[in-house]
Length: 167
Length: 89
Image (cartoon, rainbow over all chains, first blue to last red; front, side, top):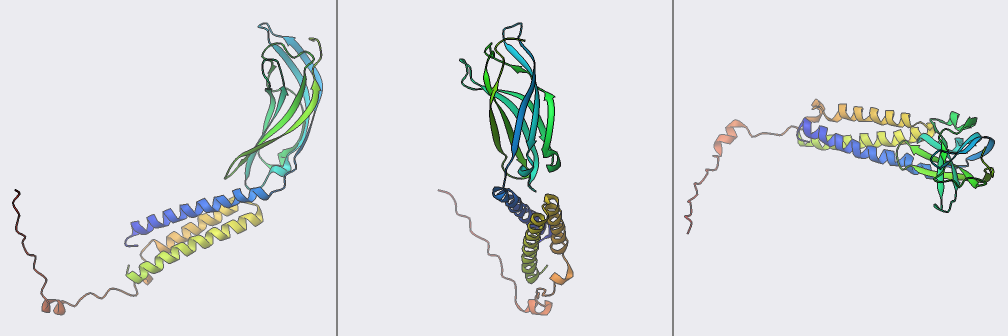
């Protein structure tokens, strides 16, 4: 503590170290939050189901998505990124995941919603395996904190299927 | 700043920052507001800076007692002895 520079430097280092501890605490407290998200998806309509000119199947769907992700939000949550993926198996790939729709939820008020929409991103197969295909629709979410580790989880909803013939 | 002041200022800085950190976390957790936590801590840092970094007069209440001029003349300064250089073999 001999000079002003010395004291200023000591204070800077100490305050930044203390800040690291202060940020670790909300991140730690997230572990004790109760989370019970819920979701339901219905396929309202299959708008188009065809084979593209270069051989791959393409589907266009209208989805009705209901979700309540409010319990995922804590004081340490910046935003939640959620997306719906169609998951199915083909002879070529043991797991295909095609993202159909996503959303960035900035706060708790927007986390409970119902939306009817056609798929935001194109549902295209690697090949032509989709006729009569059974698939799951999975709602994934990534909780992005203000400080700390991001974690992700999902709800798998099985039992959807595509028609046997092109439309 | 004298020795006593240096000791006081170091302890004061640490105590102020730790207390403002603890208050910040507790208030932030209770009000579920991350922003409140950050603002309270930032206020604490500013307060600690204002109190401990400048050389306030109350850190100088135990000044060093330098030797009086008349006393110094009674005790001569030690002489520097010129060293012989050793030649390398």
